[in-house]
Amino acid sequence: MSALWLLLGLLALTGSSESSNWGCYGNIRTVDTPGASCMIGRRHGLNYCGVRASERLAEIDMPYLLRFQPVIRTVGQKYCMDPAVIAGVLSRESPGGNVLVNVGDGIGAVQDSSFYAPTSWITESQVSQKTEVLTSKIKEIQRRFPTWTPDQCLRGGLCAYDGGVGYVKSNQDLSCDFCNDVLARAKYLKRHGF
View 1 (cartoon, rainbow, N blue to C red):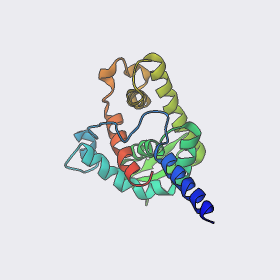
View 2 (cartoon, rainbow, N blue to C red):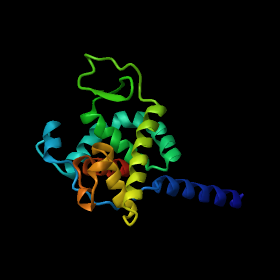
View 3 (cartoon, rainbow, N blue to C red):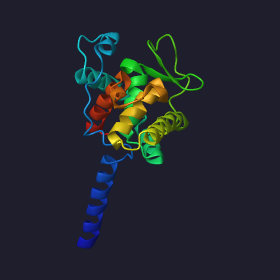
């Protein structure tokens, strides 16, 4: 009987450590980021910026993201991408807790859901498509800059996801607003179960 409990305990430890270390593309827990620009904060009605603004926006989006957490985890495992990064991208692309809706080829945000009814919730294929684009950008950055660390490649991939691979010409280009905001949101979401 005690051997069974020991085995169950080891499985629980393995499962929890596996989910906290998902991702082949850097460790978001150790990546330093200044967070959202003041322009992003103002755009969402905040009178502050930085990590505090990114965390507030992720907090607002949390109820919506939690609905998709099983899908995000599945896609994260499929692409070896930390689910918190996927959730951070989705949060950034659905500004300020707006309703996520299917708008044909992708996901859009509706400012006021009383005017637009969602046609469907986000699907695994939509999350997969976005994650595949992100991982392909990271891999392109890895090919172009083979001496960069995984964290630098993650940052470069996020900047390339938003601005195109040509945007990233050196390590001076790794501090784009999209990347800084997504990483701060992802760190917040990671601390809250993603």
